[in-house]
Amino acid sequence: MRLQLREQQAEAGDIVLLYGDESAALTHPYLARAWAKSGADLRVPAPGQAKKVAMLGSLNHLTRELIVPTSSTKHSSDFVAHLKQLDALYGPMPGRATKPVVLIEDNGPIHVSKLSRAALAARAHWLTVEWVPNYTPELNDIEVVWHDLKAYNLAHQTFTGVTELDGAIHKAVADLNRERAVVPLAKPRISA
Image (cartoon, rainbow, N blue to C red; front, side):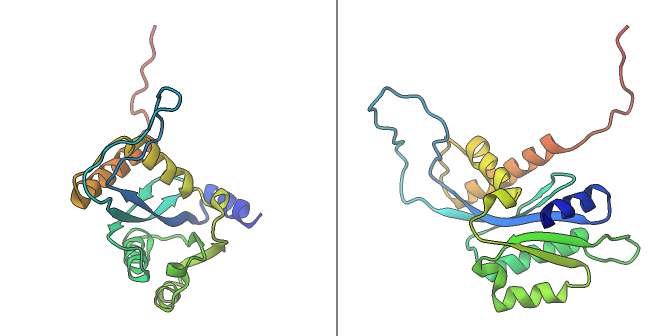
């Protein structure tokens, strides 16, 4: 019920509503959809050991813009670094009108550590956190975006290393943001 109220506030223009969470991508391929004969082995040979790239992100409820920094770890320090990104985008700055920001986060360990709590407390004048329980993807809109990113943009590809995977993640995020951007028609064409 609180989330619905927050969504209404964002749609009315009273707040900026962000859904935040973290995920990870692998250098070895995700098999999102594959056809094979019944009983066939669906393994894809991939060289070496699979490596991960951590993604900490925020999704703007209204604009659907996705902000995703990547890291080799999912630690509290990575969450604080992401908060610094949010400072630059949504925090108070001289000459810029700001709205209160509400961040929806689960109460996972990296979000509730001493370091993270201190960073959130330092931003309390413009950033409010609405906590949702762990493992409740139905309450966090960013979970659908993580699924799309992995199932459509990163699926069926083997990456040679974390650098290539990191580049693919940022390209996929840019592509998703471009797809979701609302572009008003400057001069609508009417066929006669």
